[in-house]
Length: 475
Image (cartoon, rainbow, N blue to C red; front, side):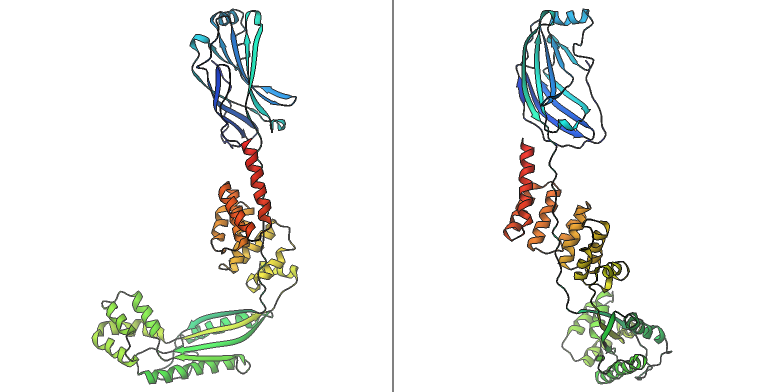
């Protein structure tokens, strides 16, 4: 017994199993027609349990790919009665249809034959039928009878073609931004005068100066305010700490004003005499022996001086540790520099800014730049990907980035973006696109229908696409 079998390492399945069909004595089941690159593959089981062949007859079962005037015969299954078998054998004509025929004597034919073959695919085969021919031959190779049954149809699947819907973000009337941080300025005991060279003050003052300089020297940026808030630690009386916090914050304000000569009212100050919130964060993260008890005292309604005295009296060892390792960090100044960035309207200028200074752009400006790029191009996709990096929590930025991710085949990335995109009608539609690209047509249909009901016009066309795809798969 011989059979035609081509092996291809990667199989791309393009059609589903087809229901059994039959001619007299031969029923076909578990049929699959698959496109595997440049080949078409036929895989099926042929049930021969009801096939009866007289001893002077031969039955040839031949699958044929047929479309209009084009056809190709595949390897046959030949079942020969005893006298026909030996006749063909004596004349050197066995197998009768060629070396790939699967040949059986009738008395020895199996009940089931697994038939598998692969052959070069031609474009005309799209939409073709697989037909099983039965031909009965008698003496002198006379054709006594023939039958045919259509087993199934092969058609290239219709791919789902997404229509992306990008949403324009709301434009910012004023692009307000800020920089913030903390500086730990050291003062001599009970002093409110800044000494720039004292201990680490050069480094700590440099933090504030570097933040101001980073925006002050930029022609596209205007500083609108500088905010300073000074804190002291709890180890002295609260009233004294209040004086220190106010005086030290004022000293820092004067230092910055002399350095930059800001307009009157630009620098605003605030103070907090004792940073109990900072102390609480430190204790909570610590492994102090009486951590829970100290936290209870910090959270109590006692006056600040009373709290500190109780901690010092009840837990002297832990207090000394906090005094040495925590309290210095509580004497700090928080700062924030508020500024505005000018608006950009020229698409070409914005495209350059995307590559050099994306932090200056609003989401609407990213959108403006993308509109002059070829949709789906590398630059188009890069613009929306950069936008979501600049605004990682913005729903519109995540929606648009999800579209670009799907377009380049990154479905997992698209799913991550859509999880942060909210539940607008456009997001429902995008989730439908993701489901369709994953071949989850039931979920896609549900999402498209919801999006259509909420006014997304593209959802109607997407539903029509799904209907055409499913109709093709059924045929």
